[in-house]
Amino acid sequence: FEGPHAVNKRIAMRNGLFMESRQRLCLNRLRCTVFTSLCLVLTGHPSVEYLSESRPFKSMSSSYLGAPHAFTLPDIKTTMFAEFYGAMLGDGCIYTAGDSLCIVGNLVLDRWYVEEYLQTVCKKLFNITPRIYLRPNDGSIAMVINSKHITAFFCELGFPRGKKMKAKLTIPSFFFKNKKLLAACIRGIFDTDGCIWPHSHTRGMLDITAKKHTLLESIKKALLQLELRFGHSKNNVVC
Image 1 (cartoon, rainbow, N blue to C red):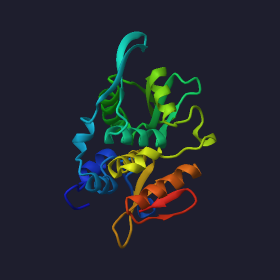
Image 2: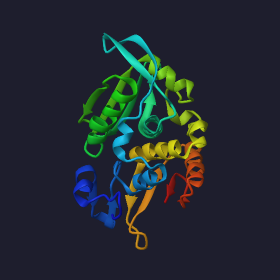
Image 3: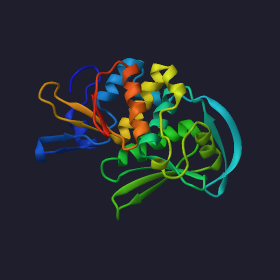
Image 4: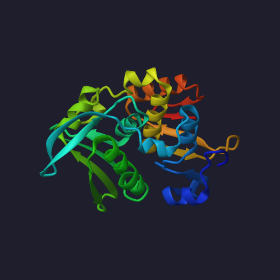
């Protein structure tokens, strides 16, 4: 990959996999991708700035992981929060009881993304350190935030409790009012539900899979607003 936001082979090998079968290049759930570069071109924000954009919205005392802890509810109009919300749309959920939220990834492919990147984002956004659970039996890694106040905050923004497939899952409307926020949200979705395919003409295609129809339509609407050309099928959009 070339250009000012290029991804070299070393980074690709560290964060993803080159799969030779079917001549498929799949950098599954890789942060630093061409799509990330496109979003950065649109937003004008380099990656490091995503970890410094947080304004305290409200602080309160709560019991987190068994000990009193002051947490923060973030400003929703920052690219860092929009990106985290996108990651929640991709691989996140709020437990039915409403006291915890969780983002789950692949133990091999997503470990750096969940354990290092997302955990740092959570510290910046919420002033807490999430719990990380390694699950070798099913090959997954989970990041869990135990806070009924934070989950209530997400629910107020329209994120559903319980199984997402039974809910109307969409990108929040207020992200569509700002291209920087919209691009950051799409970046978070791609980080969790995206991959790269080889292409004879463009050298690579960016693929986002969304089984929920309402989310897929929301992603298509976002790409149109960002003026990015794409194709689509039943469960995918391809740029």
